[in-house]
Length: 315
Image 1 (cartoon, one colour):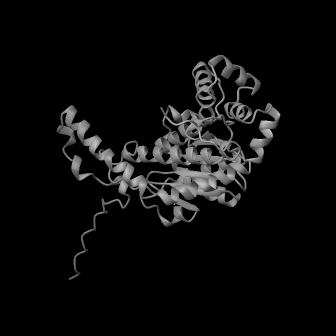
Image 2: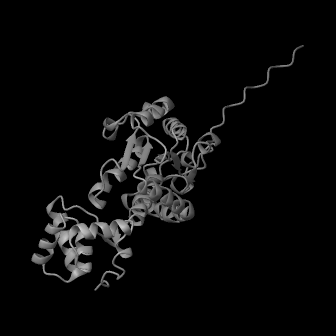
Image 3: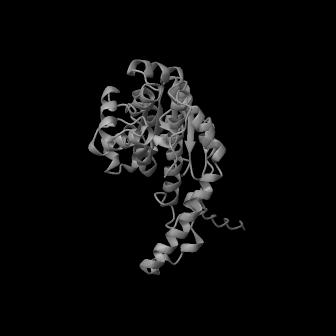
């Protein structure tokens, strides 16, 4: 008599990705009061900064790579899908008004194109060929830095983009909130992995993982921009006064550093063609705009290499 067939082994339900695990602290969140929900989410968010801090050296190395790219006239390109893609687009979009950069210097790419910013196109993240194609569409080349963002560490669109970016000679970064598989690690020159643990709602990486990603992106662009001279002390001096708020900020920075009146600061900015950094060097060295521009170029754009004195202390 033939022995009975063994019972089929059920497929495992455990997912090795930390971002897909259940959080034991929030299993009863569906019964929680509004205040208890706030407390649970807030408590979970306390894990985020510590997770980012574990990646401090890797983030610093990434800042150095991006600084070098900017100094060669090349770009930083973020690429991601869903929340990760939106966060990259957000960070890229904030650079021109904050640092006076050309929009082509930091580029945000989301799977599914700009329509996906407001209307989710979930299947777009599953196509590695589309990720590769978008690198060609953006003319990625040697000297560029391409930063893939994939909270789960597995997004095929991002893997395809990083693979193609490497083939084109770009340097590649990966931001993920779990240990990525070897196939993803293999296409990233540097991995930034703030592992924040399971989400309050299982798999909802718009929560802790999204917050950690935003913190890392903040550091990457802010750090690189500071390194290429976009600040004087902690003052943002390479802004362009493109609206009333920024015009007021530009005048206040010049007034604070130079002790000029508002009218005099405004007149100085006019002579500097609206450039705060240029105005400060003109005033400190008592030179015209062209001479100040040359001095800044000699100092690689860093005001403190041209005007050694620090800005006045905070009152």
